[in-house]
Length: 102
Image (tube, rainbow, N blue to C red):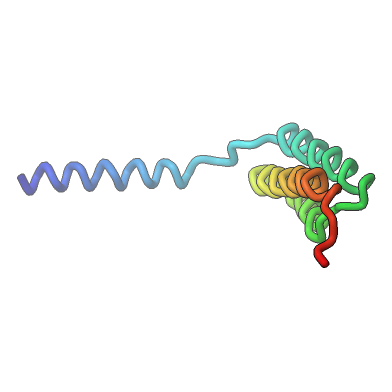
């Protein structure tokens, strides 16, 4: 039984090390398209004056990460910026006809 446990633990350790050694999974093209999609979504939000505070900052950070070659981080940041822009538009559509409370 002890041998089996040692074998399982060794297998888990080997898989963990293999996963850590894998390189980036995203490419420069992935980062570019994610950033472009975030910029496009944010332009729509800006057009309606509902851009969220951090969306532009996230896009800048994504561009910097891409320039440094960290494509995984760039895609992650760009996707977050895109979601923020989409959420800003959803909030705008939901609240555009809201009446003030008296």
